Length: 454
Ligand code: GLY
Ligand code: MN
Ligand code: MN
Image (cartoon, rainbow, N blue to C red; front, side):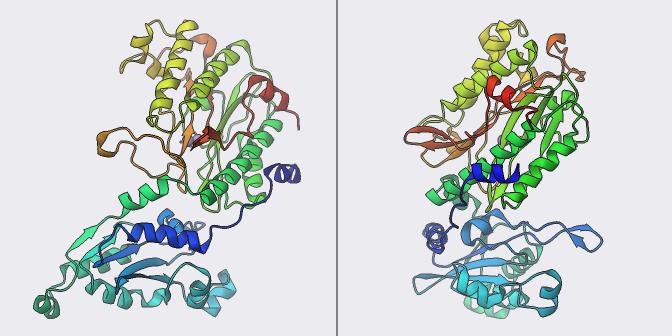
């Protein structure tokens, strides 16, 4: 199963080039003033238990601007004689640490292989960063990520040293660079798209394997094991978010991650799982019958959601508003539920803010996807809806959830505990929507052919 899936995924794309990182940096620097100091931070390691850490994942902005993945890193840039000069603070070489935890590139390795002009040991951060801070007027930093950097910035802003008073030097304001960086991250380059396509291909294979291994009595956790195992086998860094693997009523809980129930005959199983490949997320959901054959009621709901998803994907076109897919999906869902007699309202009423569709479909139809699974990018800049541009990637994920356990609604008996979501990752292109996760089957016939086939 592993090698078969690996073959279907195809060759790994080449890494993001040094030139591309530098061009991302330049596009950011072009929006700064010469007296700015840019600081990109990353979270500190966090403890899982006693002296064991969680697997480290650096900040998405650090990944985007220089690709450095290790902890204790700070990226800075200041302008000198009209040229931006970048420095990366990194963990120093340390033989004892390296014997225990792994080799470190150190400052020399960082300088030789990463897109930077200078590398300094993180042990010298306080002194070196203070020197940089005192020379700038504006500090361009996102606070709240690295407490140590926050303290240095705070100290420098508040400083009333004689030097400062005499010459009027030093920083006077702090600006969050997120809006500038988020705009860059929203539009994906060719190489980013290749990473995302690869990530989605791996996630599609994981769903296919989970389908193939589904049969009554299988544990949600066992399918989670297959999915996460495949993610690792295909050389990803693992999950992009905790797997959602819900059978029966669990399928009606949007972000169910307990995954400790058995999947029973007659139930629908909903799996929402995506991996992170070279920093780029995929996010796929499929729903299928545990016994391999949709019941009539399950097929009715499934087909409505699939039709809604196809209508929404068709809206993912240059120039359309980011919420066009949501509107299209809601319309098809409402029409379908009116047709089935689940909703006894007119279409306009059903779609209204207190309409009945909200009982069974309670989330948005998509979100930006990229280095973060819920990727950055303002949806309504200047309070106007964002229009799709080439290179943006959005998920399309309508669903219907009939939670019979819910005390706030009366669930139609025929559809009790049917939870269906169908989610794909869609790239906006000049030629229309490009479904990056298109390897993952989603018609009723294709799904039934796979479920239980392992
Ligand atoms: N996997 C979480 C989501 O689809 O938003
Ligand atoms: Mn999603
Ligand atoms: Mn998802």
